Length: 532
Image (tube, rainbow, N blue to C red; front, side, top):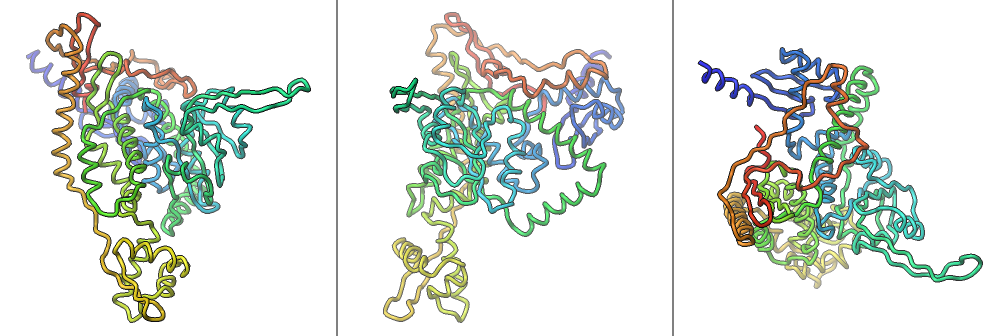
């Protein structure tokens, strides 16, 4: 009788979960669902959860905090935390991944910044402030900044891992570029000290993350190569979505208040998630050689692919860090290594596909526009001339004539009949559609991941004289004792501004292999061990 009861109780304990949707927080417990469009950490949320699930308030508080403490949100759910940003889903995801690259141990492997491009009043500042709000204590914001100021400020303040927010710039001071690429500024100059000219040496160390907005960038192209460029959506449909949202917020007082509460809870959760995600991560992507081979199996590969490939790698590592609770982790000596999964590549590739396509084909967006126009002109009575191409694409005729067509001709996409006036342009071939063999790549990747894990484990064993048999040890985060209703809100979340450094040594561990000479060697194959 007791054995049966225990079995039922165990099954019921796992019949729970939490997820985030645009409609609010969804909590499942014992076959019932609660939808909470409110600050998830508030006392009011405890009462609403209790009411919808048919449990008491203390049990609702305990359930909520247990689920939030073990929840590993997907990238889609992390995007939903920024509910104040209407649309721009792909751009929000890119921004999140880029920011989490700050968690990578080697600064040179990180994304070094983000450039938000858009016309005046397109929402660049609003987008930026919404995404950066949970990390505001890490942000150094400047409306205007000069090189000499940067030199002195960087020398006197901690900038490593800080977010340098520069608004409406057309170029960045070279001092910022040096800090991003080299991690240091060492400058020597002569300055007047006590009415005398004295040699001055300024040293500043650290890698800042630059977040900039710009209407039109005219600065160093090398800086662009090191950062992610985001172009805001200025389409008619996006304008309709934004104005519809603004109209609702400004016409419905109760929705406005409830939305703000919901948004504040989302901001608090993102910061908590950020603080609990480990720093100084080492991420291995065992299947990268297969991905590189697949992506480079094309003609006319641009040198720019080298830079874009490094960005792809950084974002894959960021995804693995975000999902570290679900990823294989191996601890060798004092380094914990996260093994990236094929799903990390897949979601990053979908975000970067439009960026990688021009790189892989060595064609710019303007080149592709001209090719599309040539294809359309084949079915029209109009001839393919520079003037007609300019009319269809909006690109100046002189640019098409002197730059785009000669490039396409050299690449074998078009031929030009220069014996007639005006010149006639013929489309010889279209851009080959680059499709990846996802199933094949996944199969190869799984094998390479398995081999890499075996190799790392073997290395760990070879590095030690004796290793005892594996002992399974599951560490689960257990909720603290029940609080009273009055203190639940305070105990459920630590203050946003209190930063405790997250260490890779604090992660939940799956399997433990004891080591006589140097303590313990850890291998976690299943992640944190929480129920899903």
